[in-house]
Length: 354
Image (cartoon, rainbow, N blue to C red; front, side, top):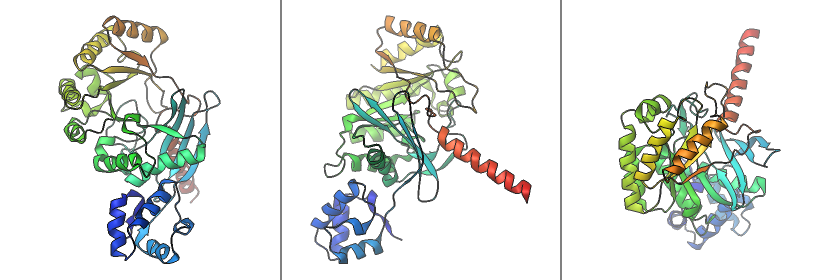
């Protein structure tokens, strides 16, 4: 089988090139071409033709295709639906802030976590993305949008810690000085709380920001919203967050989607404040993006203000995430779901005609 060359590091390419009777320095040349988004060996013009032929024989290379691109008329947010080599699709979002351009990438096709308010998990997990597929989300979003990417958030479709090894290799690739060279302090990894991976992540001392999708501070509410809470529990999650902070010195961020009448009461705010203070966490409140297949609605402005007031009175550092891309299917998974529904409808019509 051919190797996935975009998922390889320069030192791995060097070892391969020695086996191909090629000088080691060619590995750095190839790695730079790949980091620029070149996905055709023939376009690597500073390589001898003999090496280009060897590369075609030994390695696979692929560029994702834009299935759909939506640009917000409100704030310029760009949402991509990419087609992968097996015709599966994932979403990527490019958002512009005063501090630079951020790309939100997916780590899996679908998701097994089953969060009750999320579009990404409808239909379950299809497969993990390879390191090269995650990297290509960043590279090709930058190339297509013309916006230089300075920040990355792993908050798209999928659970990053459920695809741990591939995500860790992606981080090494995107951080590499001969590649995109995006610093770890400019990268956030979001998890629903796969606590058994926290120690593995802490041991790597990556200096990224760990964002925990909390969404409820008590087991009764969180287990209804997030099946990942069952068998772990909020207290176990808080314990692991505290240990992660103590090991890395990196403050954790709690992501908290505000859902009307579900997790936005004074009771929830007070419990959240206690937890945030316990682990010195920052709280990022997220106005819920409504998903067609889900019954939940975003909190009212009144509930949001009252919730924030309680947190601030308890000396909790809290911000509210700006709602970007509200006119371009802002919630992760919605574009992919539209594509799947269209395919299902077409199949049903075909069966009806046959």
